[in-house]
Amino acid sequence: MTQASLEVLSAFADGDAVDTEALAAALAEPEARATMIEIARLRAAVRSDPSAPSPRFYEAIEGELAVPRPLSRAGRVLRLAAAAVVIVGIGIAAGLALRQGKSRMSNEPPTPTRQIEFVPGVDWFTKS
Image (cartoon, rainbow, N blue to C red; front, side, top):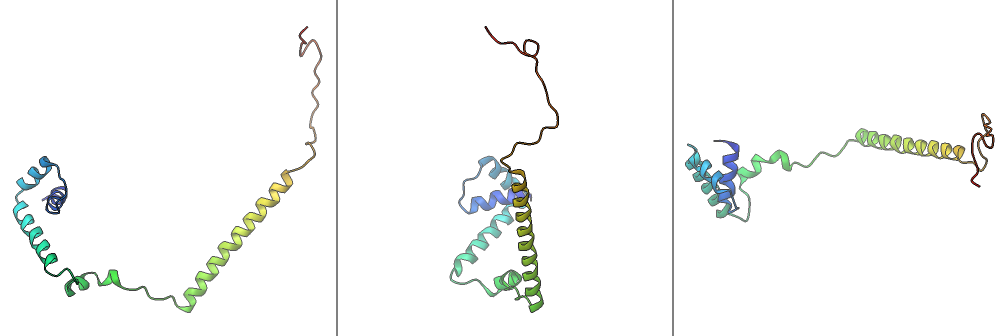
């Protein structure tokens, strides 16, 4: 049975809107009957005790629910040192950016490197 067919059957069992052509194709597959029975059993099991998950559920996801171990003293020191390096790097970059910005800003015009001369009547004409 294909993954797409499983999703269509699951959505149908959940009461979601499904494409009728896709549902017909999913039900035509050889394992469709067994899949629908399994979905019905799963729904019945969930409805039987909605107040608390079963112990089997907790065993299945024990790794997912585990609380991460706190960092050791060395781990905390390493994290703090890494954060300090990042902060110092940001400070240095900001200082360099400010320094470059100040050196570029000036009230004086730039010094000319060459002089261009225009001859009236040759390089431009005045309208009369």
